[in-house]
Length: 219
Image (cartoon, rainbow, N blue to C red; front, side, top):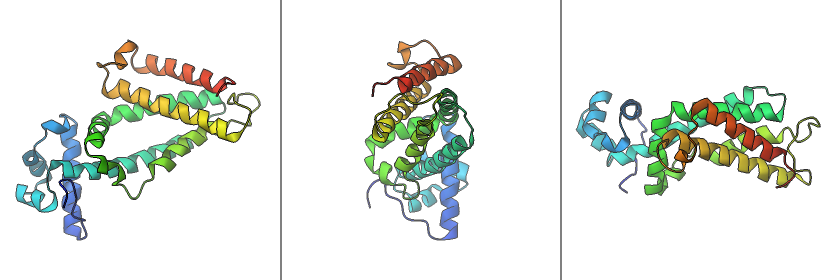
């Protein structure tokens, strides 16, 4: 068994213990960084013994795939909510994506920081979720922009072909998420400090920039 592998929880009791420990991790992350959390405090919050923890997990890092899977479900639910918001113009759609993405990232700041850092240290985490395909989920966000390609009043600027439209929309989603992620979890570090704007003001300027990029005829 690798240092971060999980013994699959097949029995109801094991599944309950696993859920309690994941809940304990979320609770601890609300006030601490992952690296500051001890196995003892996770076990105490979950109301299980440290021995029970070690019967299920090799170490604290073994909880990370569970956290990643749990985030996947949150992400899929959030994208479904985004799809339910009716926008009449491309401008409205970009503004909505920027505002709602910032709110989503900000509400899960500690989880994003933990996964953002540890997925680079423990690359197996990225492939641990067998239920939610991230590529499909993010493509659904791209589709929210592409839907305006045939709207004569407010459309994405590239007119040549669908692949260029998709490329352009993909760049916007990538830029939007990564820019806001930096601003949310590393607000006092570069490159986030390049802009003194925060919160609503920053989101507003970002949406203007991304909208102008989408409206341009250059891909």
